[in-house]
Length: 76
Image (cartoon, rainbow, N blue to C red; front, side, top):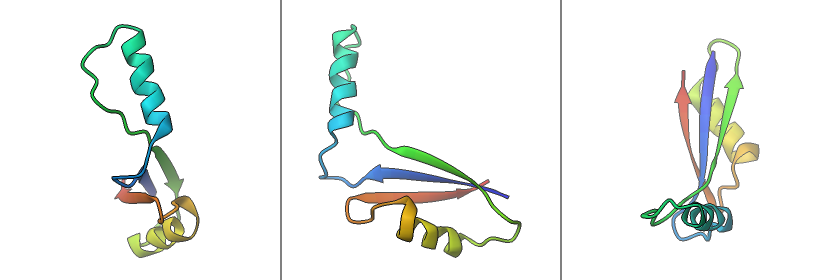
């Protein structure tokens, strides 16, 4: 089975990479971009029957820094 984990910085946490992308888009002519938040997507190939709670433990312990990041799990 496959799962996809989306990890994003929590609201209120500064996102310097997102700001750099926003400024770069403006510099190359893309007006109207008011904000950019950059995150990461982690795709996992898992043994059949792996439950979402186990994936959540993976996120809590390694895949996301839960102090500043939130995550969502998508089982494919």
